[in-house]
Length: 113
Ligand code: 5GP
Image 1 (spheres, helix red, strand yellow):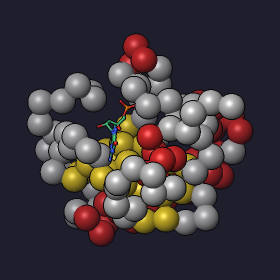
Image 2 (cartoon, rainbow, N blue to C red):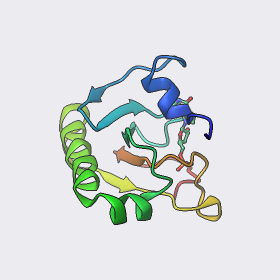
Image 3 (cartoon, rainbow, N blue to C red):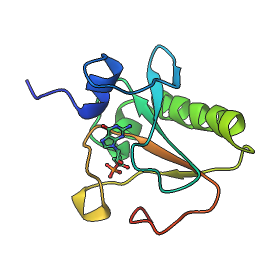
């Protein structure tokens, strides 16, 4: 069995990290290296590798990710947000447990986009 991802380890409390929101299937944390005034990560608990795998396997779970992103953008900013998934190392993905970047406000110098 593969090692749990850094996000699973945060969820399980093995690595420090505040869980900002949690449902039965999805949770959210702050990005450790924010690229915008508000930069959160919304993460399905099931560790699909990327959004294409998630969308094919469980589109309703992808919709939950989007719904949580909207709720967090309303709670932490004015409700407007960018939603970004990096797919594959060549596109900048570094953690191979699917996660949505929720970015609110102006982006700084970032490698995300
Ligand atoms: P990716 O590059 O895979 O699209 O995004 C992974 C994100 O996870 C990066 O923006 C990175 O800053 C964030 N990250 C990596 N390790 C940790 C960690 O230990 N805690 C938190 N909160 N974020 C992390």
